[in-house]
Image (cartoon, rainbow, N blue to C red; front, side, top):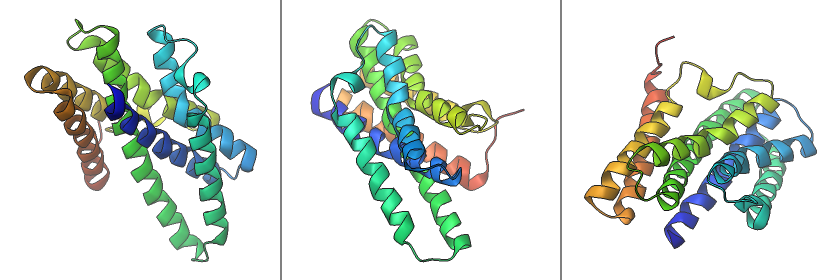
Length: 208
């Protein structure tokens, strides 16, 4: 997996840390609470994934770069929010857009890394393991974030969220057989991003 996996893993860590920070700020947490929420969002899904495939201790506890990335993201966004002078209404709309953008990129990135870990753990598994680990990695941190913030997790609401992750993981599984990993990963990433943007734009919802 090498460099390609690291690119998506670091991108997902930054994106999900950012989404955790924004939720913490919206819930009026202090800097410690915001930092913990960012960490849970950024590394929670990956830790669940690593535990399931026997990669223990999880990568987030063996390599400090994930925690460092999360904390640096937290500090930068916290400082930026306190120096931003726009009106409260405009600032709220701006943070909501940033949240959806960060959450979408985190979902897409971790779908790819989770699927790649599933493929590495059992190359014989065509769909089940890569798709399951892709969704768990992508949604696990968000579930922890929402529970800690006393919200109903996005993945459990009538929203195209986990289904977008599953679709991206499915595309990954198909393309890694028909082409190469270098094609499968970015196309799967774009699949999740496009589905989430369309769902947010046109208010797509699953039956409830």
